[in-house]
Image 1: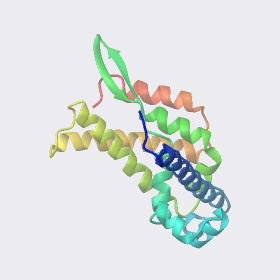
Image 2: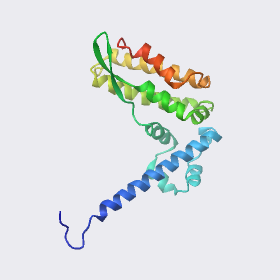
Image 3: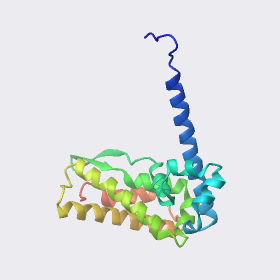
Image 4: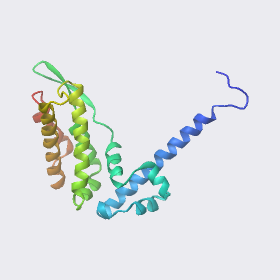
Length: 199
């Protein structure tokens, strides 16, 4: 490939640097939120406190996030998305969403932060965001597998029962200070809910 005089590949390098800088700034803001959440209730953290402690301008904060709750969603999304895997039950293969592994493993890795969030008065706000993310993930997976048909009550019931079971078990585990390893929790949840008979 040839370039005309006065033009070079520099814009791509500049774009890459800008994206890298933006990613670092976004992560710095999220890390600041996590550190503050360990010290105080989520409701008591102000946007001004966030951008000042992160060392960024107010406009920079709003270039990345709408508000504190948007940061919560971004924090869950930064964990990544659950993988799928194939299981075989009685010779029939099924594709399952490995959402229990996604949730329990990430929680165990960030236990201090999770404990701080769920021992605070703001836990209902935080839990609502988590449940919404789980509902979206499971609903989309069920749709892709033909389990959930749009406007069908049965599909929505299956989604909400699955997410209710997962979030209920997960909350019990968090509130009892992680009495069993994440691997054990995943194993028992999968044996019950992902053995090919659900939904």
